[in-house]
Length: 206
Ligand code: DC
Image (cartoon, rainbow, N blue to C red; front, side, top):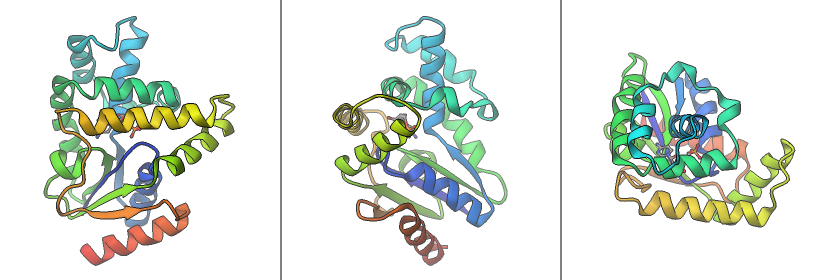
């Protein structure tokens, strides 16, 4: 069974993806980490985030088993990832890697922005997870503060709005709900309620 989860930044899709994967005994790929790793490689090697050729080379070299979570997390790398994710060459370089991950015999859970629309258009279940920008900013701010990041709520909200704008309005594989995806608005749900709602959607579709 392939479960495709898409949605904007900080919608809770990553946590949901992880929990759904554990629940159904499937592997999980947080595809945002791929774009974050490309941006990280540019920054580490002193290249600007506008360097499309450098970003494509970094994308081709990526190893899906070598995605170090900690150094890729955090607001600056998310912002940087959404810039390199707009390059069509970067997206093209990452398509096969994501499809190969999804092609394992038992299936997989993938979350991102274009999983249901581009990467796995034939997924068994498609979820589009969203929440208001204010609620997403509140959650992300709480998470960052918990890690000792002094960023303010207003800065987090501005970052989320800028990222939504870039992810929705880029020409290459923009963030949008697939026609056959089920919308899950988690604005008024905690993670347990969102998980129960997601399981009900998956069980009904599978
Ligand atoms: O899900 P995330 O916040 O870790 O993603 C970081 C950025 O990567 C996001 O702003 C847009 C980009 N991204 C993408 O374009 N396509 C994906 N499938 C996943 C992420």
